[in-house]
Image (tube, rainbow, N blue to C red; front, side, top):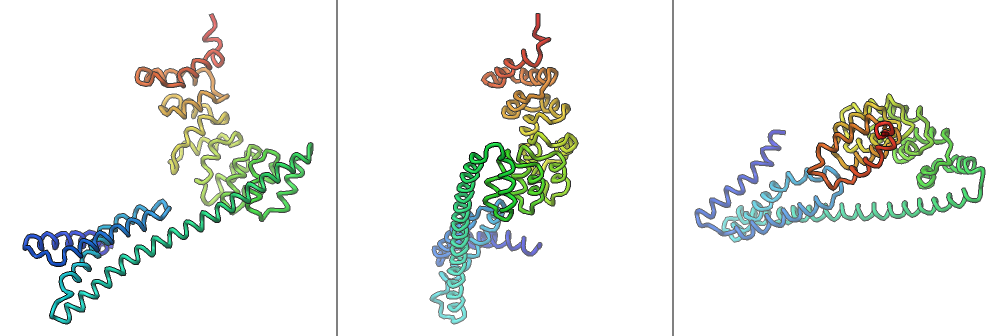
Length: 328
């Protein structure tokens, strides 16, 4: 590892030192080709990295100075020694040219490969989305054709197509699904299907708690669990207090009427996020002390936040939530 880091940092520094030394000695021969291959290596390397949609793709930029310096050294070897009378140097020069071209070509090939994969993935996703849309229309029509027995029809349809991912994703947002079917689908190894089952408003508390405690990657469900009205209070407390592996959960806690009171009170005292405040103001479980605490929190920043629409909405809710405080 230290050798790798040394090369990653040392070669770009060495390349810069060589360039400066050649300029100081007024020996510019080969510098033009060197800088050309340096630029080509850097530009194609950056282009190849930017084709990736991976969240870790940016790490590749760490190696760009190394790639550029390597291309520059190879170009310099060709530029300085391609006409040398010494066979070894002349052969080395052409090897340098081949190496520089290979480096640039590899960058281009990698970028093109990534771009092609992205295009194929986009086409596949578009086809999958179109299939889901068709299934959604079919389900909507089926529900209309079965008035009074929507749940029985949809449950039966789901049971007959348990291996049809597009159909399941189209069906799961419907509130006609029985809790038993949702419980079964929440166990799916397909995280997308399990997540949609967790999001369904009919999913039972015990199902949500099992998902939280048994899934190998529970973080994937944190937002849905924080927002769901059936999530048990003990799970909401644990979820709120645990170290955050994802951000932005406060807005879901603030808007969930099942969120324990002490959590709502802490959010009212500490938050400065307008979206979180807006969700908390509209929470049907909010009581007078919490709303009053939120008003105090808001008033602290009123002078610098006079255009905050939450202040107006809070003033509208105060007479309803705190009727005794507003009675003569």
